[in-house]
Amino acid sequence: MSTPVLVAVAWPYASGSRHLGHLAGAYLPADIYAQHQRMIGNEVLMVSGSDVHGTPITVRADTEGVTPRDIVERYHAEFLRQWDALGMSWDLFTTTGTPTHAAATQAMFLAQLERGHIDRRSSTQLYDPQADRFLPDRYVEGTCPNCGYGEARGDQCDNCSHTYDATDLIDPRSKLSGATPVERETEHFYFRYSDFNEQIGVFLAGKVGWRNHVLNFAKGWLEDEGLHDRAITRDLDWGVELPVDDLGPGKRIYVWYDAVIGYLSASQEWSEIQGDPDRWRHWWHNDDARHVYFIGKDNIPFHALFWPAQLLGVGDAIGGHALHLPDNIPANQYVTFKGGKASASRGIGLTIEEGLDRFEPDALRYALAANFPEQADTEISVEEIARRINEELVATWGNLVNRVLSMINKNCEGAVPAPGPLETLDAELLAAVDRSLTTAAAQFDAVELRAALRTAMDGAQAVNQYLNATEPWKLQKSDPTRARTVLFVAVSAINGVRIGLHPYLPFSSRVLDDLLGAPVGWKRAELTIGTPIAAPTPLFRKVDLAELP
Image 1 (spheres, one colour):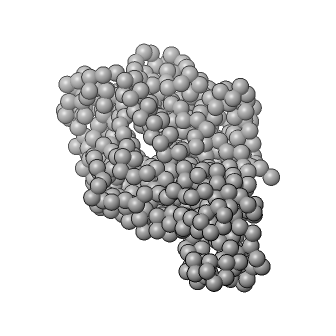
Image 2 (cartoon, helix red, strand yellow; image 1 turned 90 degrees about the vertical axis):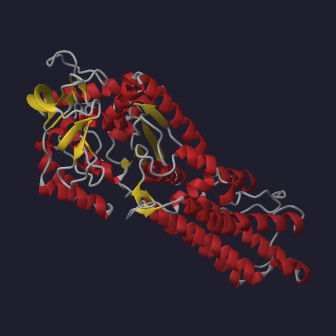
Image 3 (cartoon, helix red, strand yellow; image 1 turned 180 degrees about the horizontal axis):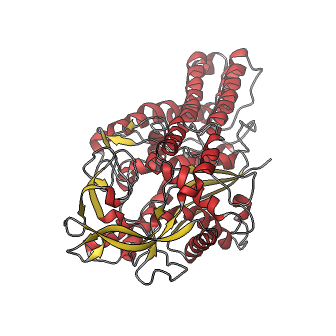
């Protein structure tokens, strides 16, 4: 039975180029998972988009002397171009600047306000006396009050992932002028996250199969300090407008609250584009649906604690049915480059554009997937990417496909040959490939994508070992009937292995689809005798580090 699966992917700030750490941390795992879910017949809706309301955007716009919209348009276009180059299978990659997103955010705000989960309070916030303006969180840097990291942001520490109010920073400084901010009173709306401590505890207690670092982090947060009420408006002129005028002019709903609503608004926007405006309910008002959120570990509190609280705070006010809560949050750890956490803003690691300039898309996807930081931080480098491509993708898989297809083209009249009786060794290979698909299916279900890739490559290695044991190039002279059987078994095994690799390698998989037939489910299909096999061209190029830009 088909399951509606929402693949919800972290929203990148449209404030600068994304790096390979972002790609390996959230976007590529989501695409691989979504492609597998589609192959097994589930109804997948994979959504995300550019977060256009983040203060990093207004900070950059101020620095460059342009408008926030100029920054957004530049980087959103860059993201779309890169997703296309990488073969990403979005159902919708939109932005938080759409009318649909504004309407969804305002509807959620009003529903929570009516239920008493939002209230108005005066608070002390940081003010830049030189720039003569209040400073939203990302306009402030300082020392983290939790771990002592000296370049902490005003809302969350990049070093320890702790969240706090900007007024908690030690030795804060304005990113606008460098001045030491002062504290001034201002009035804002607060979401009463503290209303949901008990319900979030029950929500987390029922989660089985989550990654240990995700569940332990979320439960530890709840036990150590609980959920605290947070201001969800700011003194800004860039963001979703408030649906009430209680605070007067110069206030906007803050990105801290509205970005996660993008998962819902993007689902609604996709439905509008399909001409079926209520179709989003199939995922959001459906107890049988499955919601899987792909994020980096710094986003765990937002998705495991704050977003579920916001969903619970709506009740059944949006569409007359409770909104579906997250089913799994397989947050990845960090990718590091030469020991430092990948960071676009600090210039650590390759950008996605630089990665695509150096490597073929499938090859880049493979090397990153082989190093996914699923359980621990993972070190990666240009040299490691090249090694994975040359020693594994090219040597184990690309060369296998090329030599088997070449032998069939040359020695079997250019078509899949009719086999003789299968020997034990032949049957054992095909059974092993079939078992590998069963194993990989379970690994995909657990979102163990790195392991599922290794399982597929083990299948490819098994075919190589089979060829080394049977030596069809020698049998061609001594026993041509047996040679044809061996080549039939080898290409049949390849037909199974390529299923396991399909979600990872969309471009080269299409080449094999055109040759061997489109996959039908997550299984090895029997090949049709006589299917034409043209002289192949290599699926991948070997990387020469000396020639890389």
